[in-house]
Amino acid sequence: MDNVNATADSIADAGHKSMVMTYGGKATDQLNRMHYETYCVSAVSADGDLKPEKLPPTERTIYFHSLRVHLQSVVLKYL
Image 1 (cartoon, rainbow, N blue to C red):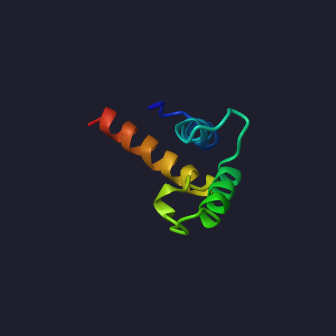
Image 2 (cartoon, rainbow, N blue to C red; image 1 turned 90 degrees about the horizontal axis):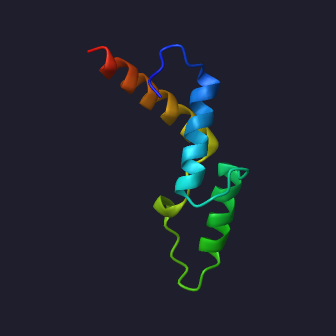
């Protein structure tokens, strides 16, 4: 999405949907819930090896990431 007139909410919503699907969630899932559930499963796993890099990002992280990506794509479009 490289629309200059896109709102922050529409950008964040597109990023959220994309990340939920990337981590195997359904369209109605929330990233924070997926993050928590993945953490709980990892914490009680048999090997006890918690790997934070395997956790889905939080919703706020994706909000800012989506805005950064959008800005980069808009700037590159006009260079």
